[in-house]
Length: 244
Image 1: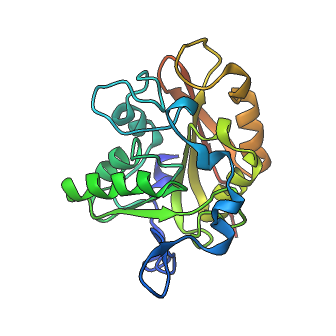
Image 2: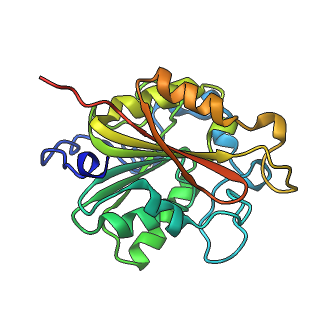
């Protein structure tokens, strides 16, 4: 797995992506028509009450209830310097920043979220740490080609703490499969069924078996489980390599 995932995409394979936000003629930030407020969905409603991911240092984090250590968990992804990663539903950079440190200056991490204020937080944090490899993408992952990245543009995708908020869960996995190269990887992290005052209601949480089914139906194969804290589960998948 580690050797396969460490292979790089060809140079320039992702340079056609439109990132951060589209700009209108007068220079104001605007979402494309398909992403207007009229098409709002549960991912747009990410906030503390629904268990959104927020970046923090040793403080309780709404997205994880303070039970997940992002630096340690990110090391479970088998990432390597120079890799290209997409963080689906990046929030304010809970995993984006640790991933950026792992992949280094020659890598790239696309922080994808529907909330522009969350992406602004990521941009500020990345600038503070001189992490030029972080690139925000303002978009809606539940739309067709929702990441706005080209096909096979990434080595790895992270889907963490967003499934319980999404109406179109399968579309998220299909988009991950579209943008991950052959042999690339996928990490899925979600709240488990442990009762807890923080986090989403139990009825909204996605069981591990269901997350696995969604990933496998999109063409991924389970590699292993990994530790994601006391109130989350972690699943590592791989997109099968094509053999000539």
